[in-house]
Length: 208
Image 1 (cartoon, rainbow, N blue to C red):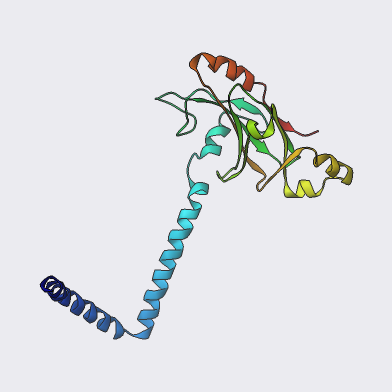
Image 2 (cartoon, rainbow, N blue to C red; image 1 turned 45 degrees about the vertical axis):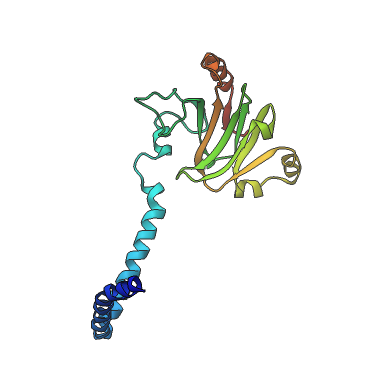
């Protein structure tokens, strides 16, 4: 009981200071209160917008870095990362990677990736770094083969081609430009050259 009474006693000055502050705020002119409220709301909105815009405004994001190494609609092998240098940050050295910077402004893109010895995955990102699809050889089988297109391009498929499309994998991209990232796991160091050679057979190009 004494401890509770002591805490109440300690809280008394803080309660009085808070009450005085609220009393002073209550005496502010209505216009000043409105201005203060608007300032707080605008500050909150600006903070939220800055967080959402960070991937798009970041200098040398993944798309910018990769565009220095690869042309559009072409699969390119990435150099193995080292402790001193890596094309992309946080790259796992246990994987070999290849990328394709796709551009759907003219026509859809076909992606074909052979499965490697252990594990192969294909991930899709917009140019701003938003991931929108991923799959692996465990789901696709010996070869990962798909058509990448915009929603407008898919809607424009002829009726007979829509029937054919039902038998193949069609990925709809939310953006015209983006990145296809292919990653192959290397179980042992001695297998690295063989896995890289397998992955070199991957392709990414405009559909005819």
